[in-house]
Image 1: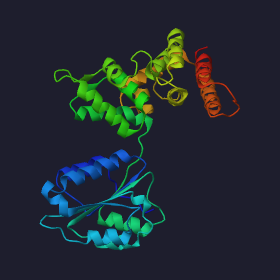
Image 2: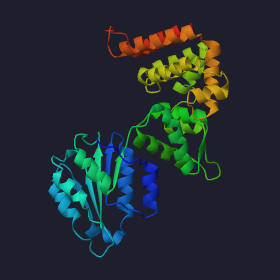
Image 3: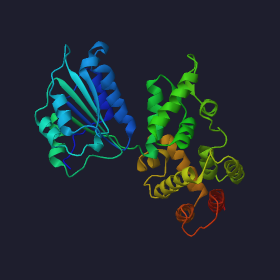
Image 4: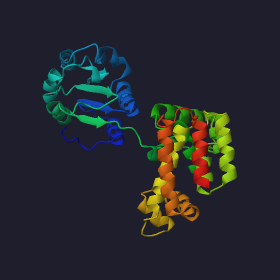
Length: 341
């Protein structure tokens, strides 16, 4: 595939809010959230409400051909500065030759938005990709990594004039995961609940609005493991056993692996200080390095290696390998026991 121009969701939205519209936006990738946000903004702001009836067209890739899309794009707007053509399910287009030809000479009065979800544009279509880049914007909407979720949550709330503490951030990230559409929906629910004179999101607010216990969640379990608090860890595991929706092996294992993998790396940090480890692990802030300093006090390097090996074993068993019948809850307890003893 041709190398895409460096473009981010933020840069696209900044240009759109400044009234700068490109002739073509090809939005592709596995994360539908950013694709929808860009397409919806263009649909709601590129035209005045009274202009949309004649100048805004929504098409579906499974129902039209590339030639039909190109012909629509070549029309002139009616009593408006521009027309908008939005193609949803663009991944279902069978042939793109007519669009490639159109993009070589796009209409300056048309804004074409191609929404290609659940995957990326075919890398073999080099001419098509090059035509898109020359005509406008090629943007890949990639899934966020788990480690990037706290920053996303903090920034999202900051833009809404709200703040959140690190514990609440991690509780939400662990409970909701990287489905940004669901995540932002839950954050909006939290925002609505906040009074105007107190825009802080606390663990109690998270428990009340999202239904995740502030005392029994993967964040608290992680904290108990880091501090080698056997009693608290077992209390949380028993709670999970009775309330599987609160925590399960599929959210628990990635949390364990990420922490102990980073803890293993922390042993190789040139400087065993909070700032040194934060820089070595490329953490967002030195605050997170405290957990690794605590972990190095409570776990030897050899024990960490053994724990990582055990996590891999439990992961395999959770997927049915060499494990015909052991329930997930028992697998979690087995790993916790091995880790803490």
